[in-house]
Image 1 (cartoon, rainbow, N blue to C red):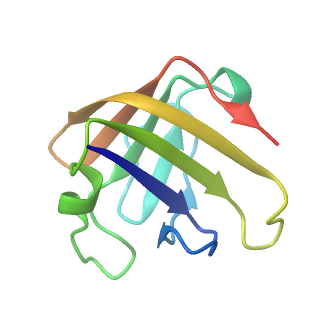
Image 2 (cartoon, rainbow, N blue to C red):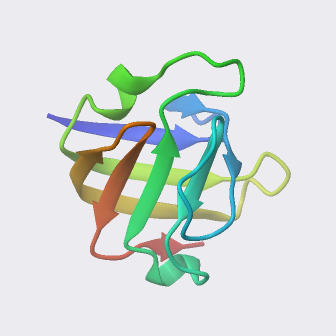
Length: 105
């Protein structure tokens, strides 16, 4: 079953407030990491299993094997990236979403 996640944007979809960590790192709690400096070339997004309040969101992150991950900023809601993911890999403290590429707007 496909699931759509929206990170940090309230569009009526499931929204998880997160902060973007440095590129290509294992993200700490409440953060996500893009595995490329160019958002349009990112093929992997890692999201920590807990938010800033140290609440586990693992069931939401691992609830599907394909879908769309939309990342945007509260400060710049018209700029966002869409990652259509087809693989979900669960690590100890974070979840990887793998994609063949993204679209940045």
